[in-house]
Structures are given as C-alpha cells and as structure tokens.
Length: 135
Image (tube, rainbow, N blue to C red; front, side):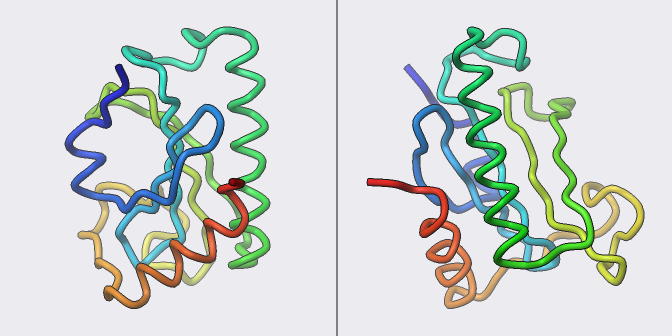
C-alpha cells in the first residue's frame, strides 16, 4: 500500500494523481516546484521501478517540465532525486530564474521556505492540475 512520507505531506499540497506518480506542489512561494512521487511502495531509487514504470515516470516528468515551462517561463528547470533526508523515491522539478533567492545554488537548505497565501496556493495548484491531471 502506498503511503506518502510525512515530511513530504507536511511541506506540500497534493496536485493529484497521475498514472504512476502523485504530483505535489511544494509550499514555497519562492520557486515554482513540483515533486513527483511514484506510488510504488518501498521504492527508494528510480532503477527499482520496472522498465515500464521507468518509461511512465519519464512521460510524467516531461509533462511536469512542460507545465512549468508554459506556466512560468523559467530560465532553467532543475530535475533532481536526492533522498538524503526523505528516503521515499521522489523527484523534484524546480523552475529557476537568475533573480531567484538561491540562484545559482540549489534551492534546498539555503533559506527557509516562504509558504504561499491560501489563495495563491490554490491558484498555482489549479493551474498545474490543468496540465497534469487528466480525468
């Protein structure tokens, strides 16, 4: 059974479920930031997914990248799987700008998160749902 790590739950808002992954919006208004979590119990690394799941992940990751590009027009998209703090397989997709607070360094661990207002959180979530969640 799939369970989302409590740290991911605490830091994100659920956008919705794609065929393989749960899409999460990081609650940090400093960066447009989506996290994909394959709903595969116990997975810690991409290679642990079946070949067909790996292909599906690439399709879903591409959808997230295209959504971030279209919605925010970033200068760069950072896509990364670290897992040093949260072992559950999750892949960050972060839209980056040369004038963002962390540029050119990584976004994590440099400055505290600045949560979205309730209205902005719902707006960003809704906009991303339009690209990512197909009923």
